[in-house]
Length: 368
Image 1 (tube, rainbow, N blue to C red):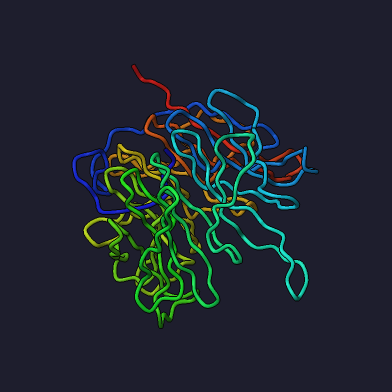
Image 2: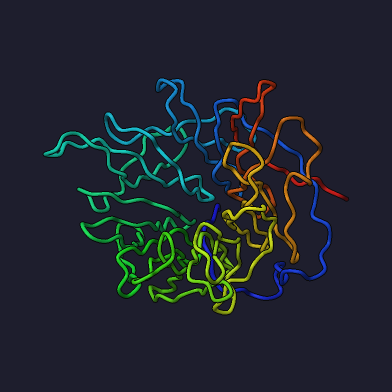
């Protein structure tokens, strides 16, 4: 299952403390997506990939798709209802069920507008259905596990709150006290949920924020980086290890570092960083504790940092782990499964300097 969330470090399962001695990272075989794939967003245990691409059947519009394991043709997700558009998959479980959002066209007193709605797709190529949360307003679905538990957020008149759907029962998860913006962003197979919340009274540019975890419905904070005041949890694995992003003291989200949450603190993964401040994120972690994400180095005009993999206490740029490929750069990594397959977005540079993107998959090369 593709997991995008975070939690406390469990020792002894493959994620060493940053800076300790480590075995070399494995080499990978690069598989680029078709031209109509713009980005890959996640991968499940059997190798099914979700992403966003250009759907020729819908006038070249950007829509979500599923790429079934071993195939090369993206199967686009049908938008729920009539005249709706812009499906965006966020998570796929090991049964191939997908959740995410789409833009729903609604008529209001001021005229027509679009609102974000949460959706579920039972499989590639099939019509999705609206999850029904906050039916007259905005909501989003961020994660689905193998028990079909789904998490996300919904927007009210003055607040954003998190929710968990189990079967047909929806539970409102407790928000951070005093916060008007608490979001659930992912979960693991045990139903532990992670996310973030805006901290009331924050003074940082963009606001103060703290990474959160809900276990059995009870809320706890995951901590900050070196006295900082901004953090978010983006993924959590079955063992309860959570990863995400956090900024050190005196810095805002504009200078966030990729982190692992452990013992009530955010631990810096020390991924490569650019000369100027920029954001880095740990976006996914598999059962073995191997982490992927994006660094804060932007070498071209794409605005996409390089992808990294973190294992045995060290972060390594993914571009150094593939055979040299002309005019191709591996941007941020967004998913990893337990087999070690990694997905993300590659940046392509044409001879005339034009920059475009496609999805990529990295397959570990056996050394035995």
